[in-house]
Length: 226
Image (spheres, one colour):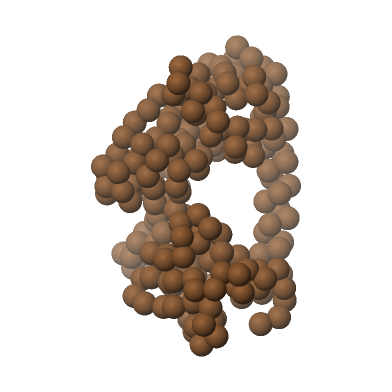
């Protein structure tokens, strides 16, 4: 019961599930089980069945994919409180990336078969989820337009600020991974980072970026000038 309550709090803090209402969130949380991963242990691989939703209780999950050249690229870093796998929970399609624990990690999990059974028993919850998915599609369409029109330095500043707020100012991320995050080339990301380094906003080292002056960097996420 305590585990269910903890999971309900995590779901309640997630915008997608929070909008379902407390009763539906508690019903979903009641389905949760827990699992633990050792550092470096794989949770799932690209192509695996999308058979569960997860929430990070403690630890960190790295979402990554491989390039044709054989390199590994980090697509996202998920920490305590983050919920992932919502789409797979609904459609059961294969995973589109790998997920592995960066450190010792504990997860809450809801299996898709249990969730589908819940929707069959409570169709009102299913209708509400359809409405929320429609809202998400509209939101993604707006963000796609924004990413096309927004200059690189704004996209990059937003990503760095968001990562530093979640994981601290010392970021273990490569410039190539950042380029994937913001939809740009590594060379253009490097030029912008070097400009910020000269201004004392960031410090750069191999596969690490230290945000030195987040307060000065943050406004750049909302303005159009360099």
